Length: 148
Image (tube, rainbow, N blue to C red; front, top):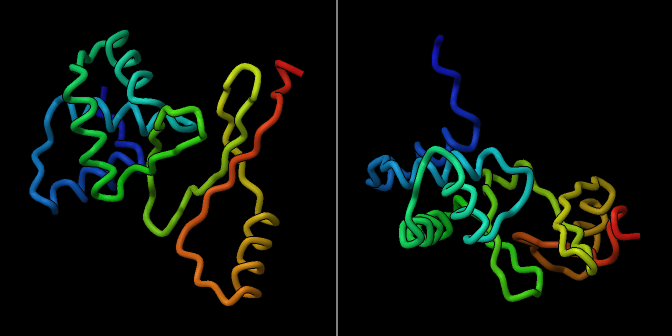
């Protein structure tokens, strides 16, 4: 069976890491592959747990080291939703695949969403205020459909 083509962010991340002199290690590859398969952000603990339950065992120190490297290189966004737990998600060049988050105040579920109208409104506010918006995060809070 032919080898499947690597997902888009995995390819981007590996090319960027190689250009910065990083070698493709087993632990780093496992973390990158896992993050590329996610719809939204995961905590370091969730990453470690998922890797531990799968075929690729990666130690806690490796998970944290890799996350730090990827954040420093701009390959991961660190998502803070106010609960004291940092979460991480793939960062694409020029903000491609940009999304925001809804956090359920009851169960804690993190739900990604996109809204073109919201994006236009944020750009309009920045222009009106004479600001140069380099990035932004929007986090909505409330109850998800499962908890309502």
